[in-house]
Picture 1 (cartoon, helix red, strand yellow):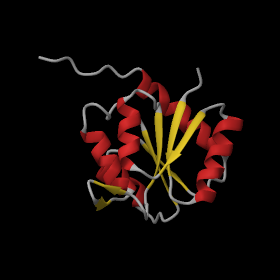
Picture 2 (cartoon, helix red, strand yellow):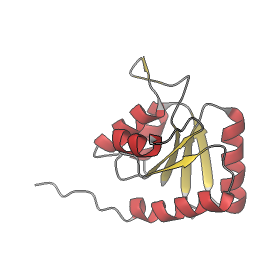
Picture 3 (cartoon, rainbow, N blue to C red):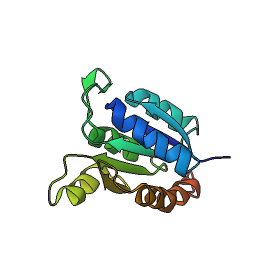
Amino acid sequence: MANRIMIVEDDPMNAKLFQLVLTRKGGYTVEITEDPSHVIERIRADAVDLVIMDVSLSNSQLDGAPVDGLQITKRLKSDPTTRHVPVLLATAHAMKGSKERFLKDSGADDYISKPIVSADELIQRIEALIPKGSHAVPPADR
């Protein structure tokens, strides 16, 4: 079974580029959304192996409030039912020091700059992260 990747992206061109690269070059199953509730629901249903999260989402809301990719990732990583799924942040608005701050603030697993200039690099990063999520052992109840 192909690994399942959820792309959380508000730009249709970026979403299509990710989808083409991931399905054609990586052989992944890809789902695209901007809806944080859908992301949470699909992860809880064990239907996602990795999330590629746009940092600056302009149309996403969670619990009635606007949220960006960092806030969504922080919520995913703080929830025991969703934190096992790796999150790869993606942004076109990175400045020096942004990567470290974004990773620290959100709890994401890795970061990549947009536009994607190397399909191979994207696939390598995903391949490095997916085993992390698929082999994670949920904490035992005490």
